[in-house]
Image 1 (cartoon, rainbow, N blue to C red):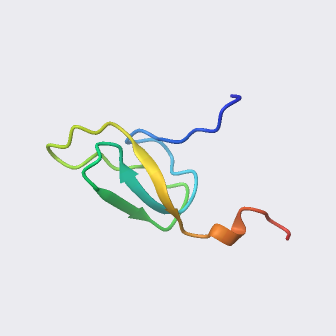
Image 2: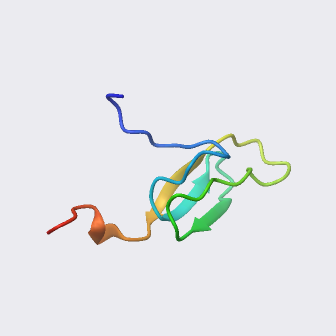
Image 3: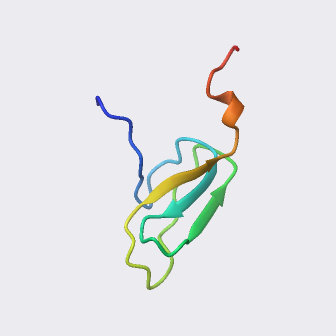
Length: 66
């Protein structure tokens, strides 16, 4: 895969701890503090289809060993 993935669908594995926002634009948030969990369904009645990272829970950990 040559491009970095920027959104994930419900049921996919959370790649990085942080706060994710639904792609519908209504500001629905899902907070997770443990990577490896699965993304939840989008909120009931929401037209969105995926989650995108809004705030990294550990912004200084992107470069291990530094």
